[in-house]
Image (cartoon, rainbow, N blue to C red; front, side, top):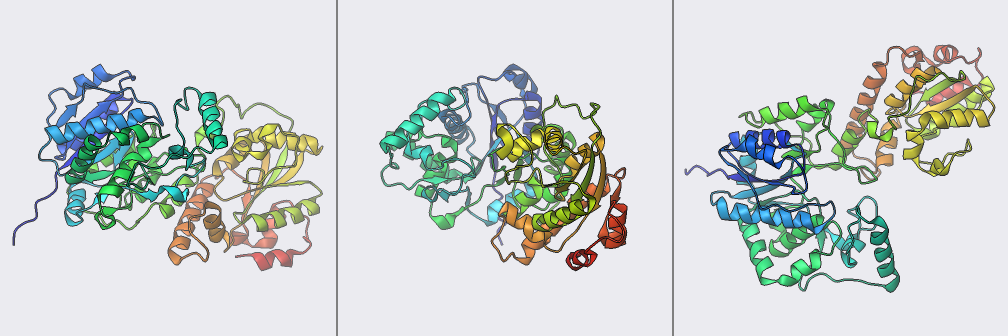
Length: 512
């Protein structure tokens, strides 16, 4: 039986910064046996340093004809096309071309990726129907291609918005290039050589394509997705990006940290984006693993469940908090009784009863997604992100408005960072509740799966809650009681509730 020839991958690397890191990653990819073509943003510093670092390195090709790249702009597609043309012309042995960025990191060894590409003769690219309008998490997806975008959004936001609103008012509706149906998806793909040869031929035959895509907004998520869907039958492409990426509801990319390593090792995608700058150990470990011959089973297929676990893994991103906030500033003493309960309806009910018993106000869940009405707050009253950013001001204004130095508040089980900061600034006592409905609540709030939730979804949600709980348990300095450990009556007494506590039986009924 003739041995199957393994594919030869060429990595097309779009880099914008950090030349030392780019060189390190390119060298690791090349040592594994892959070719690497690097396009380094013309407007960025560090090209000379990168040139020195990769000089004479086998299999690494550094492009000198570079494009000035801007986010959301045609220049990113232009740079990608330059990489593709270079790869097709100079790398005749390459069978697949994988587009990655300098912020990507391999999470699967090269010797494991090759058999997957050999066994599945497919293009790996996400191609969602554009007109469905459901791929983008926030903002108007349809106007990206239907309107002309002449002004860079990040350079001149006012002009960008004015022109978009004007076209909406006039009913402007650009149509797709003749014979094509628009598609949208992740910028990062792995395409076969034959597919890219077809796209290059199509660019040459149809100048109308560039005229259309050039004036789309964020065309790097529309152009190749549309061309591949037009040229390649559906059964010949795997409709998911080979690069794992997760985004918040505000469209901000999620960063992977060292404690995500175990989950990333379970993922069936080839690369992950973005690795946090502080997670150098994670980056190093995966680059070393890329060179190994070890084949590991990959159990997590698809991004939705994984994004739940990664996006909320007992961490609140540092970028949500102003660095100038000093948590050690002396203040009027405040005493907070904190109830940790992920199911908000249950948590609020218990908080109100305890607050009434202790004769103090309850602030409910101050940092949830619902409007907050307990204090005279500025314009960020409706914005949960801003309420989190000004967490101490929210507590202090609320207590001042209610003329109290004591209050009951609720947190969900993932708010470990907030809990830690509250303990640094105020006198707090914690009542930690677990409930059978928490897994459903977590799945519902992140819209990860439709109810009724599958056993697999609930299992992953329980894993996520377990990660939250591990982070809570690590906060050993807190005065904390938990009914699931010592029972409701002792927990309530330790929490400062009068004994006997009225309606204790009602809490017993909701105990997990």
